[in-house]
Image (tube, rainbow, N blue to C red):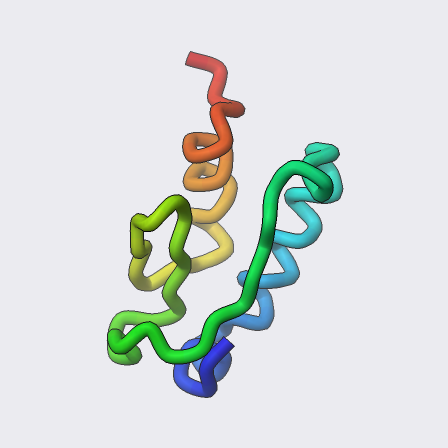
Length: 75
């Protein structure tokens, strides 16, 4: 939610995650919190899931990341 990540497209990232959680019925089970500077502004937008920092987050990679992290893959 910091200005650097926001200027790099984080608004779309946040919207995608919100829609994803709603569509999967996970809004009551998953906590989505905004954070300001994570100290790696040159690698943003950043996303942290269970302590893992993910750099250069884009909408195209979010589906796979969220499916994997939330155990929704079809493996």
